[in-house]
Image (cartoon, rainbow, N blue to C red; front, top):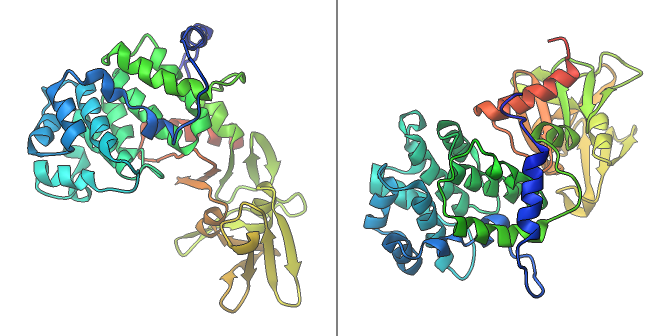
Length: 361
């Protein structure tokens, strides 16, 4: 069975029993998020660097400990967790660059990722995620995950970061932690602390595998292809016009405005006299839940091809707050699922979506 989609009933049974046997006393209230509320550093307070990080934050000695390949990975994770635990308010920070300048002499953005070890990518990736916890970028942790595929510590932190995009999915994201293929390089007490929080997100619905989850929560199209995958259903973009399909013009990807909008559940109004298209939806990132596209003027512009209105992909995706994946002509718009074409695992997931649209390629 493919290593990426291995899911067994035994694993799910273990998870269910694990959480069911936990003693959860009193009434509980969900905290901020899985990423910011799982204070597992408490399981490592016997480690001097963890205690110091909790008390004082990042300093030169702690930075050296984090950068050393001799430092156990779980202890480094606990140190990072502790650094961010001593602030009363969560807001964007730049501890990553403080650390990067202390160790590498330059900001993180100037580092050559290909020259970094997996454990270095892990440290930087976890720092970056906590620096910008509202919208964490899982890319660096994804690279660490590829470099250290057997580490439970890496998988744990990666899962917490991914669940920040969709906290209600954290129950399922943690499933792989109980895979026997992973090296349990983290203390049980730390896992228990995380489990105490994740229990708040327990639900009765069965967890989907990663491919099914992506397919059922996304819209996918391929450049110059008239078919699209809409939340798992293969449909023709325009049954009345087989020439309607996404295309690229001068380096910009265009998608059919009406089809995309209606797929998101929006209402579309066309004013022929004003040559305007109005999209209305309560979740639009625009005043009054409406956005107007025009052929001319200062409004967000659309263009006409084959008798249909098209807009730049990013223009419409941003308004609906959708994550965009674009690679080799494949477009995936998803809510709460970030894919990066530079990561092998994300490419695997995306190609499974592609196969649904182009089964013979």
